Image (cartoon, helix red, strand yellow):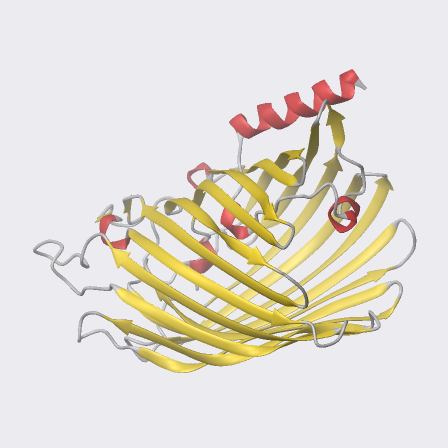
Length: 421
């Protein structure tokens, strides 16, 4: 047992300092040892050492990407080795829960080593029970990550992937005296973008006019009218502040992108005998810019998910969302509609099949540009033993853009070995 604990801690620690993962691409979650759902999400139970619980895993994959720069023409393919570890150490003090989360992803390209990336994230989380009906959650997080080439929205390609860093602090309260539940969260986030250079010309690209600070608040009110049905009211507010105006030929004296967003949603959460359930929220969103030259956004907004499990071995999820956001790299407002579907079918006790698809319609408010993005994926998972699995997968992405030079298609074949400790 001592050897298992030592090996798990050593592996998680060593890999964290060697390579790390894009944190904000995944949900940062505090595992609660009193919540059976959290424990059951792991094939293997956590490692116990003293009063602490260690959840850890590592995924090693080999993939081939036929268009690593996501270009419309002149595709370049390469083999990529990826190491992705994660670890969380949890500790309870009475009914208060705390945890440290470390995640990592390192990618190494066989031929185009300028594409190598090293991302990292770390977070401190807590859930303090101030009273039996009042909880105070908090999160302090930091990540170092990169912009995926498929999310590039400019026709020019940088020499290396654009590097980003984020710092985030979040806290609030959850009050649940009876059937009523009130949640409030306040978040402060800093986003910093590093300078880069264009691949063909070597022209410097500044990141200073893309740095921004965001202060946001979210309030959610629900009431359990029935065990499987509850209405939801949600209000969101954010204040986005850029550190510099957009850069022009004479300095940082271009457009001021500072903006404020107010979003309200109303709907319900439901579940019918575990066969079908989900969330349906609809409302309005208003994004206003301080500078008159920037186009404000007013319109419909939604968050919809539909989960279904027609058999014990099959489950799926449909998703639909509509909202706007401000692209700090392109320095423009964006309106997006997204549709997703994910399916899982357990073929046997050892085999699992997965499939997914997506469609996104993206409108750029400062121009007539419109992007249509399509995605499809499929995988087959073999459970070798408890906590050890092998997955073969294929993913296809395509973007059709009205702006010249920004359409592309990409295929990725991947083989992944995943181990939980």
